Length: 276
Image (cartoon, rainbow, N blue to C red):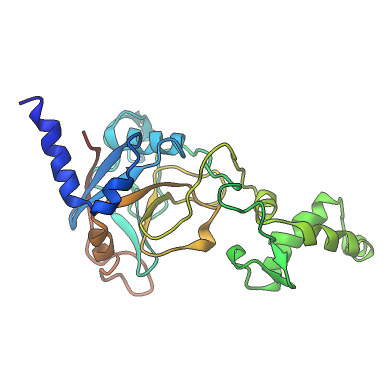
């Protein structure tokens, strides 16, 4: 019986995957199952490409990683995600879970760094400002944002302290702006990259860490319902759906509160476990 069980579970997994997805699975990557109140989702985790993130996710999921229980303030170990909900659902964008409060403001009591390669995502070759326009991935929609995200950091690097100095050295600022890459712009905003890794683009079906800015990862994660190029380089992508994408899409269609992204009916995460 001990020899049959792994094969049985493997057959269950294979039956839930598209044949083409199964053929593309990296044998070195673990598969986990997210069991929800709306069905099961199977995830291939990119263990070699985001090792710390995958270890954190599995450690919390399986109860081997210590976290701070927000209700008691005590450090503990138990399956962190069991019983939590998908607290944020945005149609045609993503579904988000992993908050112990169910509000988006909770976490495990610690934060850890991003695992993103600017080089493998091409951020080091794309201009942040070209043809008198900021790159659309920056999401700049106002002059104020342009100043905060691009011009301000350059001025500080040049030691410019006031408006008069800025006017006198405007050509220096322009020269820096002309050669600024997306990787440079993100670095100026506090993001740090590890180009020894192989990062993945935030496309439909990926699993990525939710955060509140650079290096603020904890327990919250999201699953993409669509490609989100504007998130490239800002969130660690550490897995992809290889079975149950229909469940992800079904969750993405649920009714949410007016003016809010919280589902009107709880969508629970029963368990998240590594497959045999």
